[in-house]
Every structure is written in structure tokens, then in C-alpha cells.
Image 1 (tube, rainbow, N blue to C red):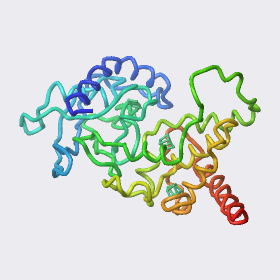
Image 2: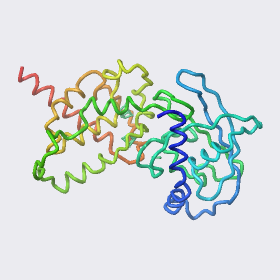
Image 3: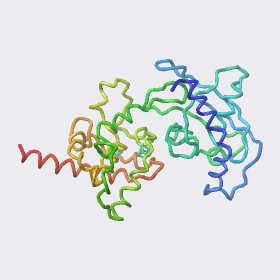
Length: 295
Ligand code: SF4
Ligand code: SF4
Ligand code: FES
């Protein structure tokens, strides 16, 4: 997506931001507190004009309303790109899509914590008059511009472990194999992964790697290990289990996980990532032993 396209996408979708923020506010555990109407919040944003360019900081004073979220404030800044020093600047670029914590595109560091900016309500993250909000792009992905990063490596990891159910065509294949309610319950939560990158940003084993040539051997990440489990436990998906375990057995696979467990703490969908890592670790060990006996 071009920087203009990212801004346009954000502006187009942010027309729903007010309504979304209202929904989130209604669900907030802090809804008992009375938000203050019309107060100002200072946004300090790490900016960058393009890949490889140096980064710098700019601050903006933004008027907020009860229910404002980070995206609606970024929209305001896009329409009023003047810093606190009175300097005219370029509109800040960010990425977003669903505005309801489903697509993962708006993930960034909000006050130093990796999370989705669409669900970051100002009344929760900066409740007082003059409070400050800092915004930074994720550090484990190349910055395209300002808060917009390229998550391509994350999707390449899903290709690496064949995160799909194989079908041979579009003709009617009949009913699929039956799945027990227990299997469904286990797999359902795994299927809620939105490829946001939070688990990768928090992982000490996952580093910024801009060279795609290195991707097939650098650490694959908790999200991909969990998706391998999702598809390995699917009755049709398990036809590719051997290929997935081969990928997880190789360089950058499941044994590169240092078990720091940061990933599971930051996953917004509360996916049991360490359970998935342990399950796939056991499966890889069994796969290695059976492969050795088949030689
Ligand atoms: S448990 Fe593994 S994947 Fe999760 S943060 Fe730690 S090293 Fe990374
Ligand atoms: S596992 Fe969780 S944190 Fe990681 S990409 Fe999926 S939703 Fe995001
Ligand atoms: S815009 Fe989709 S998760 Fe925030």
C-alpha cells in the first residue's frame, strides 16, 4: 500500500471511528469513570519519511472527546498537521482496516506497549488533562513510513508452514471429516489469530530482518507455530502435517524459541501460544524420531 493509500484507507475507515469508539467505551472495564469532554492530549509520534530514512519525533496537541481512540486522534492530526511549535508538517501515515481489533493492521507501540491503536481509548490510556500519548511503529518490521510497517515476513512465515487446508479443486468434495466439540473448542481460539505481530514484537528471539533471503532460516515466530498446530489438528489439514513439521524442525523452527513467554502475555486474542509451542515441540520430536527409523 502506498503512503497515500494508507492514509486514505485510514481516513475512509475512520469515518466509523466514532461509532466504534462508542462501542469500545461501552465495553470498557473503566466505564464507571466519567470522561472529560473537550480536553487536550499531547501526542508525541516517532516519524520516518520512508524506508532507510532517519526517524525523528514530533508532538501535536489534539482535542479529544469521550470515546476518542488513537485512530480518531490520528485522523485529527492528518487534518491539522501542525506541531506544538506551530510548524506545518506532513500528515502522519498509519495503517488500519477494520477498526474493531480484527485485521491487526493498526498495531503499533502505544505508550511503549504493543497493541492495536483502534481499540486504544484515550480515556483509558491518557485519562487526565494534558496527558501524553507516545506512538511508535513496531520495531521488528521495516518501517514504510511513520507508524506504517511492512508485515510481509509475518505472512511469509505462514507460507513456510503451509497454513492452509489442502483442496484439489472447486468441485464438490462432499462432507468433511467430523470434528468433536472438544477439538473445535481447542482449535477455535487458535483460529482467532489476526496476524497482528504483537507476539513477534515482544519476542526476544525475533529480530528485525529486512533481507527476505534470510526469512526461511530466521526464527519463524509464535504466531506461525500456533497456526501449524491449528492446521495439524484439522482432519483434512493434517495431510500437510509432515511438511509443517519438517519446516518447524529446520533452522529458525520451534527449537529456536527461548521460552521467555512474552508472546502469550501480549497476544490480544489470548491465544495459548506457549501451549501451542509445547505441543508442536513434542510433535517435532516425535516426527524426528519416526523419520530417523524410516531411513
Ligand atoms: S516463548 Fe518463544 S516465541 Fe514466545 S516470546 Fe518467548 S522465545 Fe518468543
Ligand atoms: S498469535 Fe496473537 S499476537 Fe501473535 S499475531 Fe496472532 S493475534 Fe497477534
Ligand atoms: S484497524 Fe483492524 S485491528 Fe485495528
